[in-house]
Image (cartoon, rainbow, N blue to C red):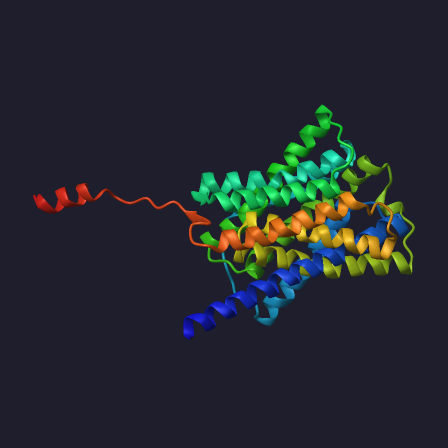
Amino acid sequence: MAPSSKADRKAAADAAAWMFNVITSVGIIIVNKALMATYGFSFATTLTGLHFATTTLMTAALRWLGYIQASHLPLPELLKFVLFANFSIVGMNVSLMWNSVGFYQIAKLSMIPVSCLLEVVFDKIRYSRDTKLSIGVVLLGVAVCTVTDVSVNFKGFAAAFVAVWSTALQQYYVHFLQRKYSLSSFNLLGHTAPAQAASLLVVGPFLDYWLTNKRVDAFDYNMASVTFIILSCTIAVGTNLSQFICIGRFTAVSFQVLGHMKTILVLILGFLFFGKEGLNLQVVIGMVIAVVGMIWYGNASSKPGGKERWSHTIPITKLQKHGDNPS
């Protein structure tokens, strides 16, 4: 009875963590879309810096209230994480500018195979045939409903390459650091958010000017736009925290696979709130394929052998020889 109860509690906590991430991620996409499309605030990197500054304030308040205990993260590890995370943010923004929407979506889809490779190489994870096939079905479904025009150029490919690898490394590192240093999601966020906020708020305005030819300090701030910026920063606290919680509870690959459910939800909400332009049979078929793949992945990866770490055992013959020869 107890093991079943414990498993049920874990399943409920996993579902709650995932729903928290889905709600905050979809919410921030909708708010940012309104902020950029309606009010013209196109300074994505600076806005991300503001997100992490708000997250820093939240972790500082929780630490002061005693909800976050003191912890240690070596400076070299912190610097590596911030490097991966910031290259991910900048790489994605530059990739979107230099590539067609179709190639940008393909680059995002390639994060799953890259994340799988990182887990195979560094964690010695082995995937079953069904798990691999289910990932392929998810990728196919999302590609069908999101990839349209595809054109490639060298600088766009280079930006996408940097974005994909840095994002995969950043997400792998979240799981790795939490496991290696026994850090909670709050602890890890408390270490990384200040460094990311400081670096992005310094680099962001210059990068945004390069990308948009507009200055963030010259933006026409008014009550409505500032309200949306504050709302975006507030939701971002939940998005950042839920990402760390989910990757800590699952893995970077599971986070990527199930994360495409957010892509489907954003498409559906976009059609509901912003009109049915772009909704056609191809998009519907792609959504259905992706959802089937996600359900299959959840089932396949949870089975014994679906996703497991390689075990390295010492040959019995050596142990027997050692026991037979005590000298």
